[in-house]
Length: 366
Image (cartoon, rainbow, N blue to C red; front, side, top):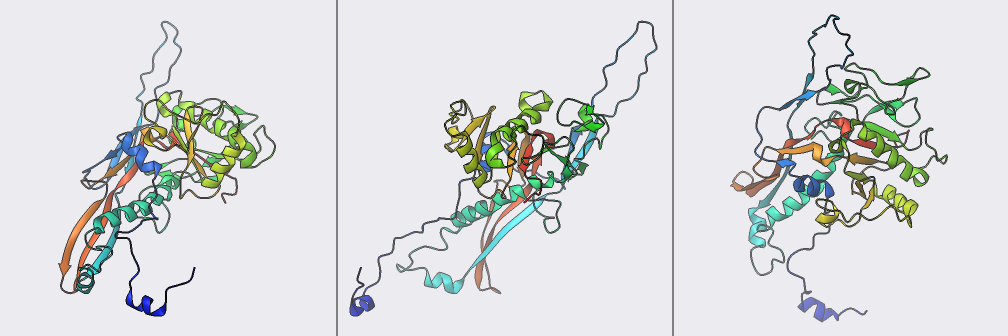
């Protein structure tokens, strides 16, 4: 297409659309699910978040009539402790900028829509924090994201999972860190298969290694094993024998999601979840499938070769602000010759117990 003559270009301005098209903001399932379930709370206070966790039960014993009874005291509780996290997104508009942007030549009113723009950008970048390791160096003031609880010390001997070795809310995720026992076979622990005492794994999330040696499908890739791995994860995260302890959403890295869809394509028993009641589909997210009662989908920002099985009913996003994010109104500062303002979040992500969730990865973790 030929361009305009030189004199036309010099004498005529292009036609710009008023306003601005924002192509950076993504619609995230995390926040939508938490909000829909009423798991976002506001106006929280205090110096930090502390809660009492029940980790063990008294033991059922057989009894012979007339025999002596030992009335022992039973310690049932531990205290989980998390510090508040804080994020800010500061910005300024100089007095000079406002003078140049105030007339009819302004295609976008950079001052008037600042709250809307900061809110979108803050949400877009804040969402990635759900996956950070709050124990890692450099993340001390971040929320305790999923990776705060999913570290392992290597592959377990049972050929399916990794061995938990993290610390979440000040409590070890390691198996048997608080006592108890689990079924063994040939001297090796079979966890999470079979059964054991509640305190053995009350704080231990399951990390399923899709390239481990125990699966029936011999090709050790996600593309071949995705369905078997997900069924294993769903079955054994449900070792609490309670419906409210099951993950309700599985979020996969987009490339893992693509391979999963390829694997199950054409299988009538894996249906798109239309969902009765609250579901991702009911909230407008139609890119989901269903397996064993959980919606499977993808989410932007999940690391490669990684997936998470999450029970959104057993977590809470606590904000210290009146809203999830707080917009600090512009204030003119003479020393900056500018209006200064920012968006902020102060709060924390709480997970009731790590054992209600699982992670999927390969053995190498890459």
